[in-house]
Structures are given as structure tokens and as C-alpha cells.
Length: 271
Image 1: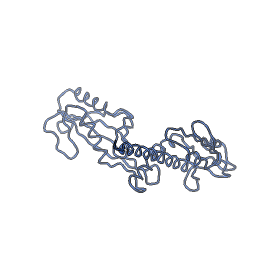
Image 2: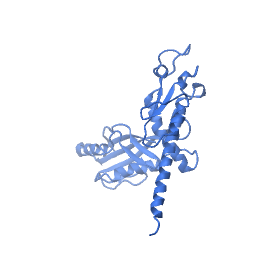
Image 3: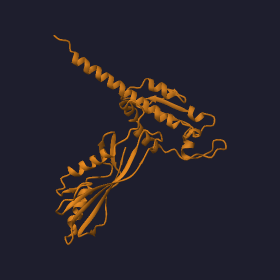
Image 4: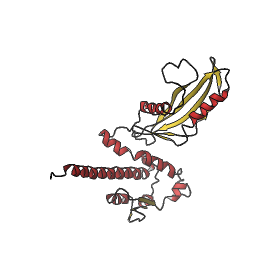
């Protein structure tokens, strides 16, 4: 019988993938802890006086805190496996976090919000993998073309029954129809390290029908469009995802050039 070289190759590939997943996880945790421990003097949020705050860090796996000290997480990460729960505790962090009390004569700094740290963790955890794929420390950036195509796919595949006037294309000759448009609001990088661009914009979908017809039809179509974009909906795109930030706004209808128009505005963020 011939040797099962294919099975061996698959097993080796699986082992390499698991090891790479562990490396991505460990590097991401290290990035976040280093960010949390960055002193204010170097642009971070950590107040440093005697070093007691940083040295109070304790880390461990699956509910136990076996290692203590500013670099204790390094020891913990050396033994972590995919699927285990890693925990970090900072015993002296309460006062500077809530802005209560003084460290000697220093005024308390601004609150360190756990939600913001979690958000940064979610965004940063993909960065090491992106760096490996790109072969360097290039920016993990979602292309505006991909964002537009993903949003077009939702409208094009929704079965709205009305034709769509796509950007820079002629409007359908007959009414009613829907106008598709995007307003790009801004782009930013919350990491301040040039590694994670966040693109924010608005999808504008305008219901167009002839004047002199009951507005009920336009309003119903606007409701149908708005229902496609509930708060929190996530649309996968190359390099990340698009998140719908809030309920879609159905704006007041208005007459224009013999038409009746009802705009629907959808706020999104891609990262």
C-alpha cells in the first residue's frame, strides 16, 4: 500500500495553522498590554511614579493568577494554547482608572475606559496576521471600492423590484426607481500607529417616483430599504467588515423636477 502522504501533509498543515493562530493571539495580547502600560511621558495613559501600578499586574490562565509583575504576561503567554482563557488583573489600577484620589501630589488623569480598550483589542487583534500576509508592517486598510461593492450587493440582491440608478450611470428611463449614493465622511486610525484605518460613511438611497401619486408607495419602499440595514448588521469585506452604526434614517419626502423623492440614510463604519 502506498504511504498516506496526503494525510500526512494535511496533518502537518493543520499543525502549522494552529501554531500560527497561537502566534497571532500572543502577539495581539502583547500589543494590548504594552499599550496599556505605556507611560504618559511617552504618549500613553499609564501614570508612573514608583512603578507600583505596573508591577501590580498579574496574569494567568483559566482563572488562576500564577504570575505577577510588569512582565508577567510574557511568562503566561509562553504556555498559552488556543482555546485557553487568559486573564490579567491590575490590583492598583482602580484609583487612576476612575479618576479618584491622588498619587502623591499628582492630579488624577482622565478615566481609562474599559470599553475603549476592548474596542482597540478587537481592532488590533487582526493586525499581526495582516502584517504576515503583507510581508511587513504595512497598513491594514479596507479599500473604498470594496466597501461600495459590498453595499451595492445588498441592494442588488434584496429583491426590491424597482430598478436602481448606480453611481455615475444613467437613471432608468421609467419611474419609480432607487438612486444609490455614498457619502464618505472621514477616515481615521485610533491606534495612532498607522496600522488600522477606519472608514466612516453614509449610504444614501433615494426613492424616486412621479408626482401626483400617493406618498404611501414611496414610504413603503423606504421602509423596505431601511429594514435591510438594522443596527449592528455586519457585512464582510476584504480586510475587515462594515458595521451599521444606527437605525436607518427615513428623511422627509420632497418634490424635485417633477419627481417625489424620499431619502434613506444609513450610517456605517468599516474597519
